[in-house]
Length: 460
Image (cartoon, rainbow, N blue to C red; front, side, top):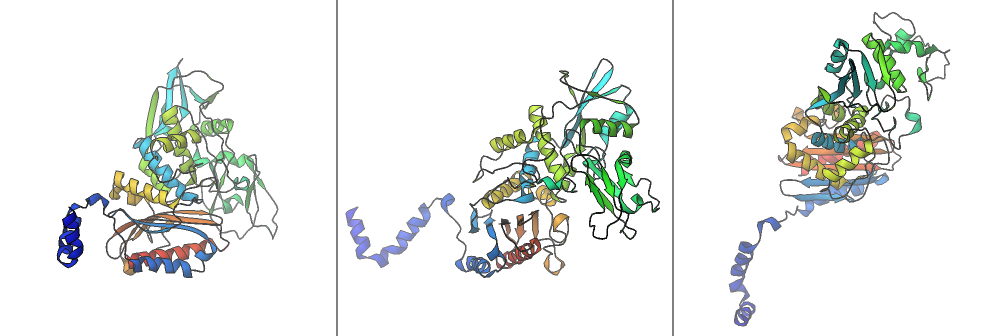
């Protein structure tokens, strides 16, 4: 052995090819790591260094090549950021793992010639965003007296950390054991002001007409419809030149209101079961296609859907409704392989208590694609220039197919985008970019992210 080592040092030119051949032949394939050329990394590094917009933001960005199992670029990918509606990616994955393809929509039992029923959290009931109304038909056609129970609901109606002044905002309807009409009042503004537009109902659901009051008009007034903070008292301002449009506003959810709404809609009496009657709801009615709920969650970024899906997971796994139990179940059973354990507090991303790392989002996107396949996953994500919340952004060049499929996320001073990007060379890459704590406009950040992803498309 010593002689061979001496001959190597004395005759390097002769033995170097043999040495290299031995090294290459003995190398384990799984240890080979693809190293991206430095100049391509420098393109992104230079972009961030010279961007006046990103210079005013705390930004994390990870770009990953799943085919080569290689991180191509990492800018603070290990740091925790507020993800806004990128939280819905976690909600989607947990729902895919925990819920069936057709969602449980009602649990019921028949006892003493009465049909006792309770909600599962399914958001579809009389919600205009859903076509299937299996539960409505079931309850309307039942020959039994109906009794409603909601003692299994152990949650608040607002998510943890939601801003108090969101109570009248259409993007923040209250959570509920049995949502009805999407937990929204819908008003045709001109009809509310008695202008005849040949619509059947100026207020939907009609029962809320009794809670509506007219206010005088103030020229400095911006809101045309208002609501009291803690009660269902709605006010409208009679401005004659109001544009015709539907105004949506959440109502204050309660058991009594739900029973009134359901009784009025079905045209029959509903009894409310208070306390703990020890009922065994052994029957489950399945009615809502899960795919429809997931489309609304991801394409439209519907916050109510996100919250209700967590409640449905809790009900499915534990028989009670509590968002935190669903989150703990998902983190312990579905997300243990992520690089960083997310701080996860709601289903929609409305709370700033959520904290995740870009590299964990990239890892989750990779898991989603591998487990469910691109043909199933990509249509759930907004496609640049075509669908959902990316319809107006990331237009494909020269009228080609979309090259970005991503979930958006927006709060004040926070914007995010995570998903899949297809480059001009045909590569499928995964990315996550999250921007926090800036004072420029969200639109400025979105525009800069668009430049960044175009650069990725062209350079990789």
